[in-house]
Amino acid sequence: MEEPSVGALVQSAMADVSTLIRSEIELAKAEVGKSAKKAGIGAGAFGAAGALLFFSGIFLFVTIAEFLTWLGLIRWISYLLVWLLLVLLAGIAALVGRRMIKKIEKPERTMETLRDLPEVMHREAPGQRRREVPTVTDGRVQLRGSENYRV
Image (cartoon, rainbow, N blue to C red; front, side):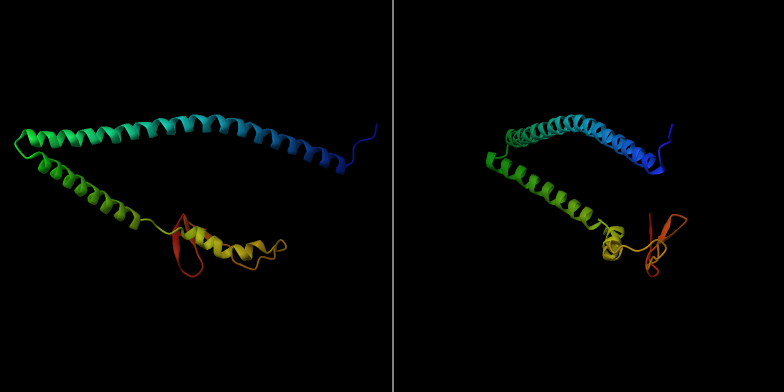
């Protein structure tokens, strides 16, 4: 009986690996599809909860205004005070949001890799690298020049 050639064995192994990879991808699609459906239903439920909370807030502020009227204020003044309270709360929320946005850091690593992209796209022969590989020492990556950042 003649043994198969190395080329035939490699071709058979590649076909088996290809089939295995396709099967794994199909399994992942099925699992992700089921999870995505559950996530969508959960997100919809959170959205409904948020809408209901929003509308209940309107009734809360009407109740506060009516309470101020019951205490003896003129109705339009009561509602004006509640409106001013809402404007104040909105201003505070805007300031907090602005402060949080200012704390957002630039994506330094992404910007560095995008600058290197034209070089990387140019295929080089193995062992013929024209640019230096970043060095990692004790969790720190050395960029071009002397800048460091944490990984």
